[in-house]
Image 1 (cartoon, one colour):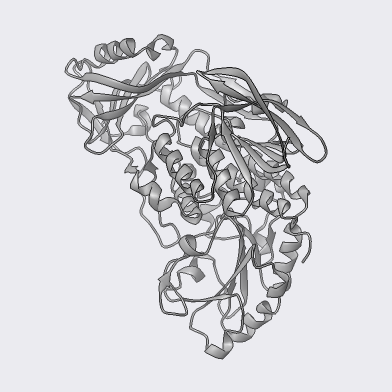
Image 2 (cartoon, helix red, strand yellow):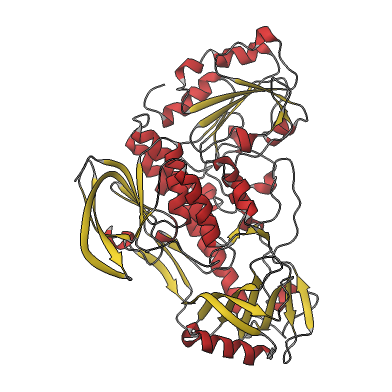
Length: 570
């Protein structure tokens, strides 16, 4: 074995690639492997929620993701038999606008293969290339490292060629069917809907307009869907879903075509090239813990659920952003390894609540007449019709928060922090969006309309909040308040702590005394409004690398108190 590698990432899906990119941007040496012999194909987990778009923007990939994205299509259900007369047209999510603090209104559709390709292209800028055809076969740990035995795979089978990699840490990002979870001895608790089944795939269809996400069937029996993948094109993502209906044989292309034609009555549709077609049984499961020694499971390796709600890739990416900034600090010897346990502490309750929410959505989608009254598709009330419409705002993930975490600090408004930790944990996923407050642990909102010292207009997400450092935002009404904070800047290592001074009016040249702080003018008060700044008072908000507020304090010593929770020395 060669020198000890800082991090081995086993699995090159969305969560693995995001984790790899954040670590690479942090200057951490990594290797990323995948048992598959080539990149994944197909649309698969295509729903990207607004909160994920924000994280992508801080990561520097959102512009490239948007180039390959499409809007979520309008859905249209048809009368049967015949399958051509529309009986209902609706949107999957209620339309939501954009606000200064929420720049992304609705989610977008990006196929898994396109999203992963974007991440791989960005990884190449750091000299990192996915090693395909290499998969975990065993894991051994000691107090200082993880020894992973890696086998080469060819033609879908394990070969005799092996390599041992000693790393300081291991991230298991190899999905629900991967081996990392099993090799670490983690349990996968939950349920499998044995009587139900689904088939998903991508196929080219002639005779179907790409203007709608087409739906046939009756939710109490079966649903057939065809979602356009490319604007104006012939490629569709198809799905066959049923209750007490297990379409195992429909993963065969000919049988899938026959079933769709017979059930929809659309004999005019012509199917040609399938890029993939796969059978799926609904599973709602999660691990008992996200960490075992120096190894961590991330994304689908840690939790799997029904596709309803479009939470899989989104929650997986939040897993990745949570563990990587902590790993980077530990590997740089700036933080104690004990901080790594907060990955499990912070993510486990959120994922548990997410699973409950998506399981309820799935039950609603495929419920039987005994479980809910239904008379086929309704033109007026989607809540009664059972047709796919997701009203719950938590799915956008704006409300995910860590108010309950031991490593956040609220000093500005401590009276609003519940002393009942069980209560705050219970609201970790649904959140406090409607409360009109912003406390430590909440999502860090956007703030456009900031003016730089040279007069350029800028915003937080694209230019300042990054997954490789903390950001200290100092809101002050005068130079005196700013100075009291900047006196402490020498205690905060510049490579991992950036400082923004945000004022209502531009300070004089002699008042901007700092060798490293960036001075911004809040020209439209968007930052003050989003961060609930108390006027004529010093407000300090520390944003974590994962885009959540780590601390809200009133003075520099408050910021130091927070950093003592994170760093070895302050």
